[in-house]
Amino acid sequence: MAEELPVLLRRLMLPIYLPTALYACGTAAIVPVLPLVGLALGLSVPQVALLITAAGLITVIGPLPTGQVVARLGERAALVIGGAVSVAAIVGCLVAALAGTREAVPAWAPGLFCAGVLVMSLGDLTWDLGRQTYLADEVPVHLRARAMTLFGGTMRVGRIIGPLLGAGVIAVAGAPMAFVVHLVAALVSLVLVVGFVPPRIVAPAHLPDTEIDPGPSRRDVLGPLLLVGIAVLVLTVARTNRDLLLPLLGHAFGHTEAVVSLVFAVAAVAELAFILPAGTLMDRFGRAAVLVPCLVLMGVGFLLAPLAAGLPGFVVISLVVAVGNGLGAGINKTLSADLTPVRNRAGWLGLWNSLTGAGALIGPALVAATTGVAGVVTATVATGWLSLAGGAWAVWWVPRLLPGRRPVPTENAAIDP
Image: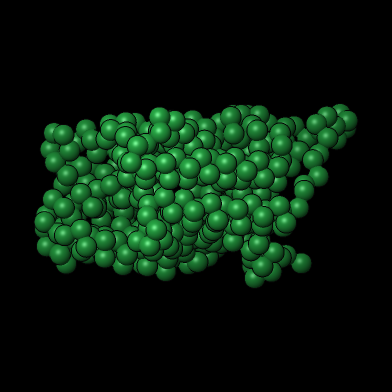
């Protein structure tokens, strides 16, 4: 009998969902203070921007080699190693941040901080890829979208709670204490992984000729992965630009920082309301039933940018974009599981994550180029048209490549990206 959703969720709560929420909470707690700590250590604004850009490049390039490492070590070993690396990096950042509170900042502190941030990015990649691979292999196809959507939802919850916890400890004990929040969250996550993620039995690398299933060819996997991945890359652009453009849009029309923050909080609640419905829609009606409305709604929201001149218009724009983004909760990881083979899945997931993650660099580059010429409203509208184009691309390709069936690859398919 097929495993039911409540049973599956209970089985995955301690090894996957709770560690994911905790780690996301810790990561979100330090995001607001990273630039401030860098400045306190004597880095200039351009140097801080370069550091954040370098960390972003790691998230785009890193999944390719990291995927091969996860494929060789297995998900559990990769999670343990990635968690240990992240803990060590967080400790380094904490030590550097504490040194920045002294009257005379030690010469080694800025270097340690930069190294800690970059190494932490590598640890984050390993955490994410290991959990993504584990879920893709463990979850039955008929429950995949709901399980993956909840996976994305736990990250979002952590990203809401993290800044609140961070703000509390910062108010009491200063900016470096945000790293303590992340350190505790990472340590508890690592303990849960060690205790509840079982070792996986690795299949022999070479099977007798009679047992080899050639499975789909490299082209059979690579073509659909790239074609569907383009739509998700556009989604990543839209999501990245939402966090960048909406605050800039609010500022351009004279809304205060407090108002912009309050609107973001309301939008975040609206997003969370669509997490479970999105998974159910995907499992019942296919992936395009969620990806297309997600891109279209975000595109429409961005196109309404001129209405942000008034507060009601700004709220409407934020909510439309939030509903679209909420509908897309888990779509990235669900599609990645659909399109990658079981054999060497982590390697293929690394390629997928690099492709789709490139949107996090393309989006801000689009904003920088457009705002330099025509302003924030034009950049927002341009993002809207790009989102609609991504929706049209998804309408054409996703139903053709994922027509409500099980993933193409088979368990014994020996495919290397």
